[in-house]
Length: 319
Ligand code: UDP
Image (cartoon, rainbow, N blue to C red; front, side):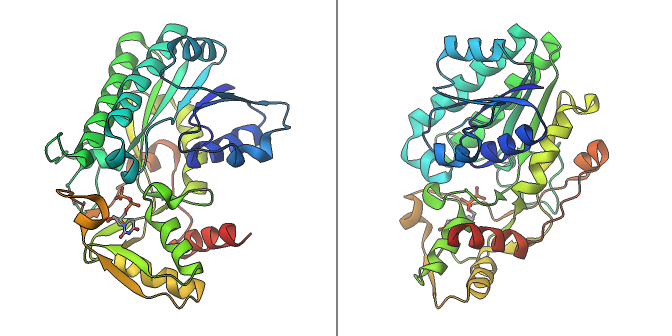
């Protein structure tokens, strides 16, 4: 495979590059280093089957050139993290809308296969017991920054889907559910690396709201091979597929787990949402994936338990 990984310097992207290069594939990364970092790819710098290009997915000519020289595109470049979306709404929207259109259009032009990364955010406030891919989306006003991200990602999916249908390029949409692992930074919001850093520093753990909101965290090491398998599975083409973990936990419960596993003396500090994200912010109460479609398509079965996931981040931060 000659793969282009947009957003390859990011958290999931860099793990995908590790995996693809280890399987002997040729990998080119396109990344603007906005939230990703070269450090995430340092281990690949000398690999003969790896190349890094610094640039934006908004650069149509560059995207066209890079897509034209590969056969498979993994499109993960995006403005990510709740803090990024809230702090830079215009830039986030431009990247998430026009950037994706650029990449998908180029894939269609050159007949490349493409995987487009999406998110469980598209389900919005639907707190069903297990969200299947055809579950309803329950979104607040698109004028609220949180929902503007879900709106943009929903359109990204539609762009991928319609291009796939009309041009026949093999297209897979993957909806990631709270994926965590080493290299994920808490700087842009993500809760697990934030809690681990706070616990290791014996600082208060910042739980937003009352901590009863629930999430299900998945391991990057479970989802990366699954993404590559899906790309090789024609039955997955033109579908959206959930990928995530299996254990649900409240955010308060997560804080307690992190304190226990780090042996920290941190206390838990409850911070009102308005203070954390600004006025008018709405959180999702619960978000639980149903991954039976991925199981049916590729035998997907998450293997890492929450404690393993938290421990892998503790180890990485202490290294
Ligand atoms: N959260 C928190 N403290 C933090 C960061 C996040 O309590 O320092 C909460 C956040 O409000 C949400 C959950 O943790 O309820 C997961 O947040 P994250 O941004 O990781 O993912 P998402 O909101 O997209 O599920």
